[in-house]
Image 1 (cartoon, protein in one colour):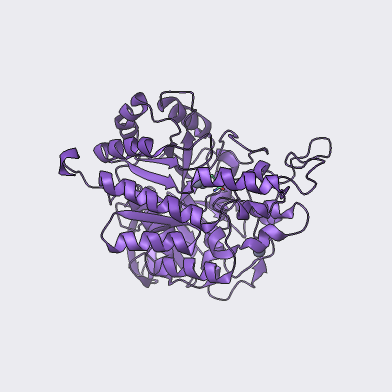
Image 2: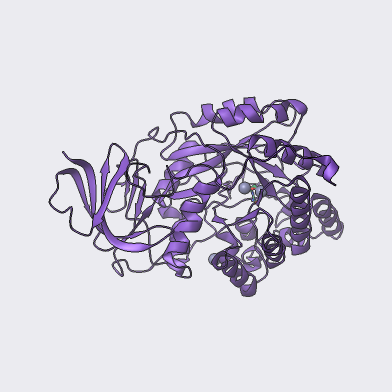
Length: 490
Ligand code: URP
Ligand code: ZN
Ligand code: ZN
Ligand code: ZN
């Protein structure tokens, strides 16, 4: 056969433009794009009629937690590389970047990388890469950044909060300086950990334990302070940073101001900050636990609007899920771990932080019909690929160059709008915070390196466990080789 697969008559969307094309695939790569129906008669092993539906480069989700140990709070982590990546392809995502968490008592970061690669090996349904999560930046760990780069890991995440993960400012500077030398991209979780600890004590002293006080314990100011501090630290070292999971208008404004003044500050937001509000935490009983993530969902519609606006105006470079799955009902002997006799609605400090969302990310955002489709592809596929050194293998449709990773949606108005239900999802979690949200689109097919791995109407997940491969990454497209940092210039 001339081609392995042809996709006919798609409304093909990239970050740059939209047009009606056929796409041919050979040996797992995009082979060519041609005018619609011009490939109708070529030989191909498989022919997919897109019928005018959107055809996009596969989703790249740059923020996914899988198989991580429970570090604080109570509760049980839910997804491993197998169930998490299965959920990804069912939602149109073909590449995830997951975390390899350093054990704080380990002066090296390479054991964390080995461990994550061992867990992912043979387990994944989609392609995957890894970020190193650094909780103890020893001299040894910093010296190992060069090894990370050789092993195809070009990004790290650090925390300004959580007692067991939080770095001091001088440690953050150490990390940033090493990242500058080795062309590593630093992701920063920006919330002021001391403010959080103090607020939690204030609430608990008043016996305010319920899930809703999770949000009270981490107001916007705590995020915006840490965001400003992270920006200042990166400004001192003159190296790019990416602020992860930005939730609030205050923090978004700080980032925009930094960007306007020319600083290389990038930002990520997530569906929970576009669709969920504090109301989710206010649900009766323990239900509010389903919307406990950090930073928390903010107060109301105006906050959601400002995050949408931040995507439209370019403040946010990428939109990831921050899929961080925990079991909602982890009862042993009929008792949930975060609930005790003196706190019958649960104690928010024990509720694990994070929501599942790797599968719902693309359908929710596309169905909301708020962004141009080019912008949608830019922030959910192309920009994450560029930011983390996967481009143009991922996030693009360049003939002869890009992997044939495609998300093919339903033709216009061929799908009746329907509610999201957890029962229809493919993760290993017993809830979704989006239960009942109406969507009008869902991926009909997902292709990974030319193979159909998700066929919603014929078999669902048809890809094989273990087909997903580790993808070695180069430096960020937005990272530049720089002369040695000069302390005397200050
Ligand atoms: O609540 C969240 N976001 N949990 C995931 C861990 C993190 O900080 O990204
Ligand atoms: Zn985080
Ligand atoms: Zn996260
Ligand atoms: Zn809702």
